Length: 314
Image 1 (cartoon, helix red, strand yellow):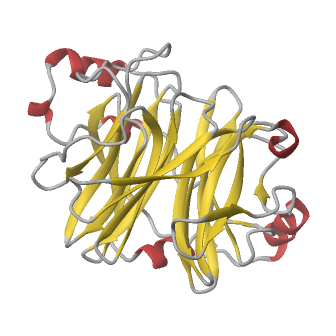
Image 2: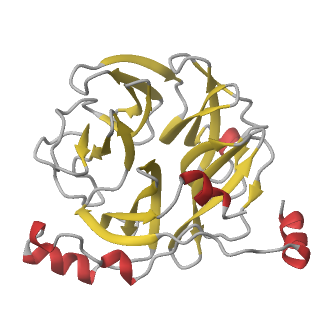
């Protein structure tokens, strides 16, 4: 892939990629989130962490859980998925499906939850694989069913250098099986984490996180027709940390101490990107901070369709 990349550098044509606009910080201590549209409403799925060794703020419940937040009103749904982490939602035909890791980090079980009203949830175990360690997931509908991108760091033979992204397939969103880990993975030679996968016009587009020198982290984007051979976007990185991450959308929602905490934070990271299309715009949620527990949830947008935005990196 690197040789192909260098050939493109020498001979390719490069048009200007579509530019996202960073809007600013939404919350302190929230990392893994996903924007979705459900019944015409723009919602934000959140994994609410309990405090851990990295010093994330303690939520009032004292345990990990999921909920959705209306991005216009700020109202939250009742909690669900108690003691589950690293969740991701997928919406189809008015039903919300959520996939997440049971227990703590390095968990070997992925459960799913589904609901038509965001109040009453049913659940089912999707994967129970002792010796495996699951982290972030992402689901999209492809050309022949559904694809789940799954971040792992165990077993070692499938991981290589942690972290690595594997892929599973399903016909119905309930029953999943992994594609061959040695053939369908990205990428065992280096840190590749935090997948977000979408499908347009015969191509799977995946945003993921690269570890850079000097403890810096930036999201990149690749695409693939077969989830085996990947093309690196020539206009990477997807986004980079900068001072606009520290803009605060609604200062009145933060205390004086929180505003100082935001303003003084080390920012060497843009990660955990997730996105959706809403009213003709691309809504982007991401995390910024130090990748060591001092992290912040922020909002960005692109004034155009999601397909147009993703395709512009290639």
